[in-house]
Length: 498
Image 1 (tube, rainbow, N blue to C red):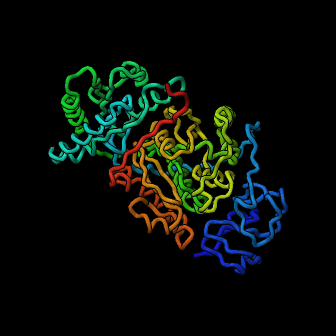
Image 2: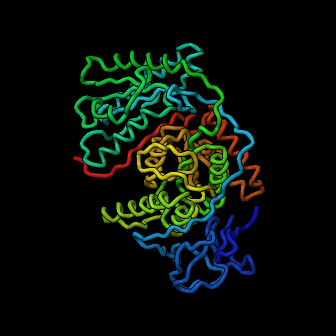
Image 3: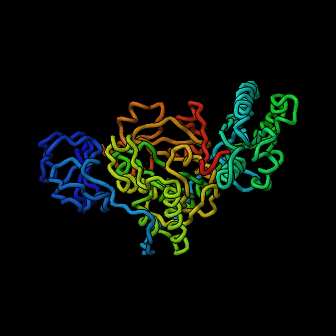
């Protein structure tokens, strides 16, 4: 394994790939102190106020004079970012892959409305948090019943899943709209072969209010139950779930072109390896999938701050550029409206892993976008329609952002991490470790180890293995969080609670 990496020839720092002892010579410079793995070391004199360069871009300015060989971190480098900015469209020629000779397939489910799915589950969607426990009890009972059904049914209907949440009532304005949009998006998600919408009856987002957001629906696929209107909600739910299972069992896996796949991309618990291994690997995947007509979605707007111009200048046209400007500045305004510091990032875990500033984090985060042109920009809760790379408005919070990706139509979420996390979202949530230590320690969480890319693995071969693994997951192979029975969802809280 190499000792360090200089990511771009113009960088004035290196990143330690393993702990570097004082006195170790690197690029003709002796380390003046210990440099922890994932952290940065100065290659030359950097005067106070001068930029620290990593990835070929400024990740901040020196807060003091920095000598060659010094450890560079939060104590001597700070953000150089401003607040709401004006931008100029300076398009660059984004990577455009050659037309593929053939389109690979995965084994998925074709729905009557033309959508496709990678799972065939029954989802229970509460309209309000008051019925969360009922939803969970219904799912538990239904899964026990499912185990006693025929082999054919059990091979086709994978699980009954409840998605409890604390919202649906006592909300106002955009906050209530967020709830209604996300719930309707999940009700319409193709990974659900059948859906039970479970209401209380007196909530603001009751079933009658929610139906216009859902739009047209198949009565065989979507059932509604208002608990206040029946004597025994468990007995009524049991009947409806039985009908939904019967309907969902009519679907079987069949070959589907990968051009139909929609993949969300997210990172959390990032470290100094994130922008070197896992995130660029996901970026390679994004380029590979979009070259075959597929769709990827990148979110976490606050973690684009400092790298946003890279994405803006890859927008296919000026209209998308303007949408991306609004995506960035509207999120900054959200911080200002709530009297919060825009650049209160990275997190303590990020810093421990070697990330020093938001620019440092953002330049690593946006590696997941690969090099393809931006084809679409989505508001929170908006469903994706344009094949290719899309940007989605959502915060950096892991559960909220991953749920937003699912709500926008992602069949699978690729989640890179340097610190590790067990969480999931409504769709298969694949964990990709940035380093081999994490992959070895938390094999019950991690699905793919990108840490091998700083050891002896070859990039093209690893990218192909990763692409093939995603296809296996799309074809039914369970990821670690699914095997553990984890299914989370979280809605963006944005407003007053009554």
